[in-house]
Length: 404
Ligand SMILES: Nc1ncnc2c1ncn2[C@@H]1O[C@H](COP(=O)(O)OP(=O)(O)OP(=O)(O)O)[C@@H](O)[C@H]1O
Image 1: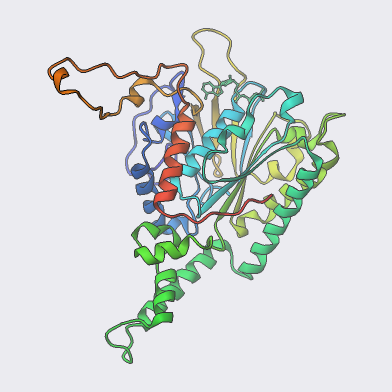
Image 2 (image 1 turned 135 degrees about the vertical axis):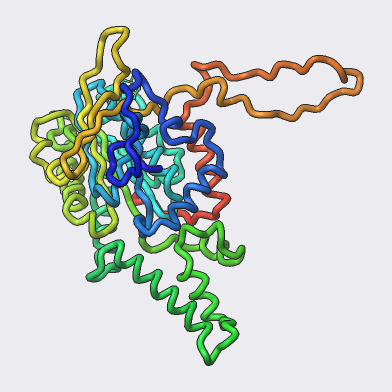
């Protein structure tokens, strides 16, 4: 997928007014999310030299020239979403989770979620919890338990340290380039004059199989190699930390249960802002406009910035999620955020079904298949999460451990 407003679009596309609302799955080109369609995308990401170590495409919604997609690798590392209450910040973060997951397999990109406001006392409904069925999501926590929050801050800092030690002087992309090169050298050695047939010994076979192919091409690996991969997760995958209501963490309300531990979480997030780019760790945060958050490191270091409009009130006004993305070079693209927790449209459930047919009923008109009504069926996010889960199983994606 290439995107609206990004450089390199070969031809100028016609600009059209923004829609009043948008469905994220349509913007992703996944109106009927199926495991094969997701696996095709993941395989494409494996072959992309621009996305070494994992592709991180966040599709925000519909723009004047098609879908608006922020590439956290090329244009990030970090994304800030600002908007007043009710402007659609949480829904946009959910769209980011969904689109990152659709673009890359879960053992090459994992997601950690934090709801910065205590959902119980803040009355924030489900927050980011609704995303936890997406197989890429390894961790979710809410700012209402100081013990878990401190534990999270510690393990996030430990993860940064682990990555820094593993990378040495390389940055994330260099490290992955190095692995690919050494994999190719191993493959060449196996076909050296001393081994003209190129038949690899047991160790050569191991190394060639594991190193020559980028981890995400598992679906094309020999079955044995694919099975081996399920044993251990690749040591370095992209990690995206997504935080809702950062302002509530920066200035926790008096008496809020997470207040005593908010500082430690903020310090860990600041470390991600500073060091994340080199370490393959990205930060996506949503917050209210202005206030003390504007001075925070997370806000200052965000290269991609979204500003959402206050929710409209009139009947002919756009749905929440109307905003503008400012790219690192200062260009601005308006968009309508793609909704992902809407109920799936009726047409999306019209799949062929097989039913037993009694001999004496042959010739009867076909019975109407009950179709889920719009309004009480599963959400697009649930549909996508289930397809992602099946696709992850199909490619034998290794499980990435939780940070908690
Ligand atoms: N892109 C969208 N399209 C249609 N409806 C949306 C969209 N984004 C949000 N909404 C709806 O707008 C309302 C507010 O959304 P959301 O909770 O995401 O906003 P918020 O900025 O996080 O505000 P708050 O923190 O006060 O909840 C919800 O009812 C949500 O379903």
